[in-house]
Amino acid sequence: MDLVNRVAIVTGGAKGIGKAIAFSLARKGAKVVINYNNSEAQAKAVVDELYAEGFEALAVQANVAELDQAKALVERTIEHFGRLDIIVNNAGITRDRTFKKLTEEDWHEVINVNLSSVYNTCNSSLKYLLESDNARIINISSVIGQAGGFGQTNYSAAKAGMIGFTKSLAIELAKSNITVNSVCPGFIETDMLSDVPENVKEQIKAKIPKRRFGTVDEIAKAVVYLCEDGEYITGQQINVNGGLYV
Image (cartoon, rainbow, N blue to C red; front, side):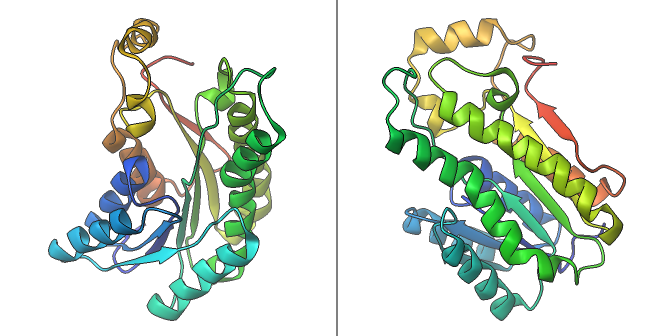
């Protein structure tokens, strides 16, 4: 698929993996909507950087955990660019605690931001994606959704739910020429990982066959591949984890 003039929404696109995805899609010719919730300054900085490189971009504030705000995000995209071809569901948070200490708020907040947001954006955008001749939905899940993680029952459940959502929606939308896939990062060099103590990082790294953490650009490459060359790939989990989970 030629991405020139295609329009993509990247939720949680102001930093980390989302920012890398936004830049990679823009450099392939797509017009990119940078969705953010609280990171206004960072989102606007991303848009400024993209414009400085000659790309079209728009920052839109929306808490995609809320259906009405997800709808507003999509409508703002259509109002500004006139079409929608790609949704990258990347918005995510962690509230890591052992299950004994996990509160109801911790549970619902992570489920709503990481999983319910995927329903919200897909529900809001489907009628526009159906108008595209070759649309893509890409959900950024996680190795934790596949293998689990200590102190991450809420996060693991949400990310595993994204994978199940991906498989079912892919079956439904295949006849409409819309592919739906998950990208499952392993441990990636982001702000989320920077909070982990150094000794714990070394223990994690020792379990990764590649003996290093991944980069945000490596995740972005997988997303671009699915957008450009993934016409016959749908309902899949693309693992980018250095061999940590196979």
